[in-house]
Every structure is written in C-alpha cells, then in structure tokens.
Image (cartoon, rainbow, N blue to C red; front, side, top):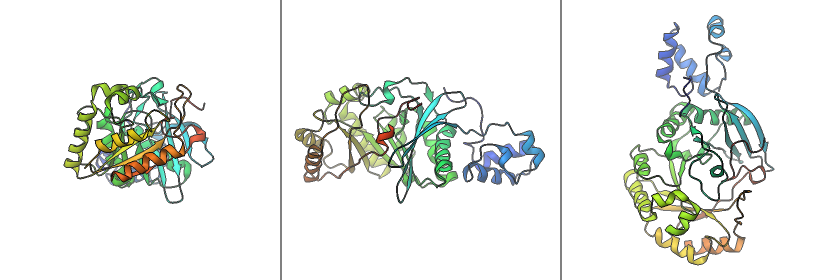
Length: 341
C-alpha cells in the first residue's frame, strides 16, 4: 500500500499554490514553495527563509516528504549506495553513479520486489509495497544533496518492478521532467515485462528510454531465470515491444545479463539475433554481478566478445555495459533492503 500521509513533495506548482492559499498565505508563495522543494531540496518548511517566521514556526512539523540516509557505502569508483529510511520505517536502496560528464541515479520504485528473478539480490528479499511518486523523486533530491551536484540522468533499475507501479512511476517521470528539470530522454524505465503494462506505458507517450530485461532468447531458459516469464511468453513479450515501437516511435533497449555457461554461448547469441531481427532496438550486454545466494558466474572476456561480435555480424545494435559500484554491492542486480548496515 502507498504512503498514506500527505506530503508537499510530489505536488505541482498549482497544487502547492492551492495548499499555500488554504494556509492563509498569498498565492505567489506557491511558486516560492515549489522552487525551494524541487530546486533547493529543503527538508523542512523552517528552511524557507522567504516565508514569514511565524508561518515557518507554525508548520515546522508539516511533512515535506524527505527520507533520511540510514547508511551510505562508497565504492572505489566513487559510486555511492544509500540505504534510505522512509516515513513508515521501511528501507530502500538508491545508487548515485558519478562520471566525468554526468551524475546518474538508480532509483527504486518498490520496497523490495515480487518478481523473484533468480540472479537478483532484490528478488531474494521480501516485498512490502509500492513507492509513491514523492518517495521516488526524493531519491534524486537526496543524491543531489549528498553529491552537491545536479543529477543529469535517472534509471528506474533499483529495487522493484516499475511496471507494477506504473501510475506512480509515470507521475514521478513527469515531476522529474517538469519540476526538477531533467529531460525525459535522460530517464530510463526498465522492466522484466508485465502483461498489458508495456502497452499501457506506451500510450502515455513518454520520451523516456524503455528497457526490457530479456536475459534469454528462449522461453524455457527465461522462465528459469525469471519465474514470472511463464505468465508472459517470449513471443507475446516481443510482440508487445514491437507495438511499443509503433506507438511511441522510440526504440526498445534489451538488457541481457551474461551468465557464464548459462546464456552466453555462441548459439544463444544467434538465437537472440533471430528474435530481434528487423527490430528497432538496442542490446545492452551486462556481465553478471555476483550475489551470495546463487553460484552463477560472470562470463569471461572472450565469451563476452564472441557474443557481442555475433550480434554485430547479424546487424543487431549492441554494446557492453559494465556496472559501476560492484565493490559496494551497488551494481546491477545487487540491491537489497538492509544490506550494508
């Protein structure tokens, strides 16, 4: 269930203006409140120095909607993994990934994840609830505050399955774009595939990058790696992805985690190329990041190169994405509530 306590974070400038008027303040303070929430990232109304002192004192305990950093781990590559405490005491993970030219945030959309993917740490834990749009946006503001740097890119690849929380994820995308000021094309929504939800997302006509976690090019192996795949056969998933391209005019990215000896064989690359033939798509090959619960192995460099070369020879757009934050258990597939405490 979503967070029930109303917060200011998540409201538009019009909604904030309505709220501020209800408190007996002039309407222009709505824009001021909006700026201090989304551009300055305040955690309390007492911080808004342009507001009357008496008002700030009266509303000092009114919930803004900000989480607290419970723990932060910093990897050698400067990636930071945060455990954030929500208002109800639950914990989520968020990752800040800096490079020379950008600061990317990997956000969670749920507390835990119900998908139970075999290679993913999040799926090994408990699922509690969806996050509200405010709780999603807060993660970006928290990383900006800690890095003292503007976030340029956001990927919905943290804890949870975004398309099981489509309403709040779409709302968060719009807030990040319109209120925080991050271009939609700098946002990525990733899914393992939820029946009917891909087309639902398509009809929102967002300009985000849409990524599907494929990880296998045949139904049997995909069900082994992603148990929920038995409810969404691969041919139907790919058909919906093609419709997504038709509706939005934007290509689909396919995430493919390479597991040594499991899905990284040359014949499996050929199989994947056949699935994606004629598709407006791009394949991200991701070397597996180990977790404690299973003994999958990361593909070696030779296998990765052969797999990539086969796809290129079959005219499939492909790149290899090496995850950052591996040493801090902050890489793709390693997030879990309460780890690192």
